[in-house]
Image 1 (cartoon, rainbow, N blue to C red):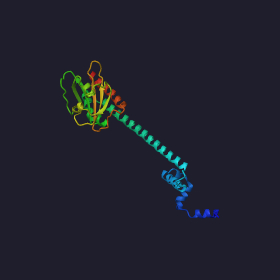
Image 2: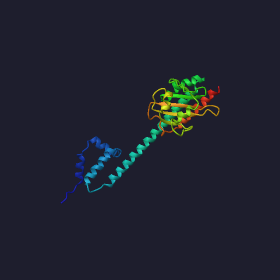
Image 3: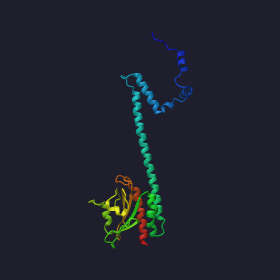
Image 4: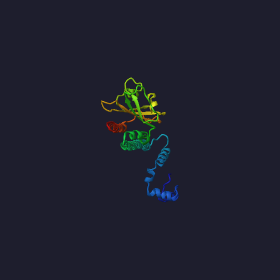
Length: 244
C-alpha cells in the first residue's frame, strides 16, 4: 500500500528547506530571479532530465536550449552592429578633425607642413605624403622626411598600378605596401591607401599617399566612404592654394 502525503507532511518538508532562509525567502518573493539566470535554468533542466531517465526526452528542455542558442546568436549580432556603429562614428569624428586641420593654414607652406605635424597624427597613420608631378624632373627625387614629393610626369599612374596590367584609374586603392611606394613613405609601412587627386585638365594629377605600420589598417575589403570624403576636401583645399 502506498503512503499518502498529508498537508502536515508538506509543512514538515517546508520546515526543513535545503536553502537557507534568506535565499529561500528571496526566491519565493521573486521567482523570476531563476528565469534570468541561464546557469540556474540549465542546471534545473539537467536535473529534470536526469529524473526522467535516458529513455525520456524532455521537449521543454530541448526547446529552451534552442532558444538559448538563438538568443546567443542575436546577442552576438547585436554586439557586432553596435561595434560597427561605434567604429563608424569614431572614424567620422577623426576625419572631421583632420578636415578642420586642413583648413587652418594661412599659406601653402603651412598647408604642407601640417600634413606630417597634425593631420597624420589625427588620422593615426605613420606617413602622409602629397605626391605631385612636374615636367621639370626626369628622375624621382624623394625626400624621406618631406610631406610634399615632386615626381616626373607619369609617376603617379605607375604608383597606383604597382606593376598591375590594368591600372585602377581614379579609384581609391587600399592594399599592402608596394615596393614602388616605399621610397616615398620614407619608412617601413605594412599597408597603404592611395587617394588619386584630379587637379583639372591643365594640370598633372596628384596623389595622397597614406601609410601605416599595421598590416590590417588598409585592405581592399574595407569601405572607402570616409577616405573619399577626406580626399575630396583635400583636393578642393589644394586647388585653392594652387590658384594663388
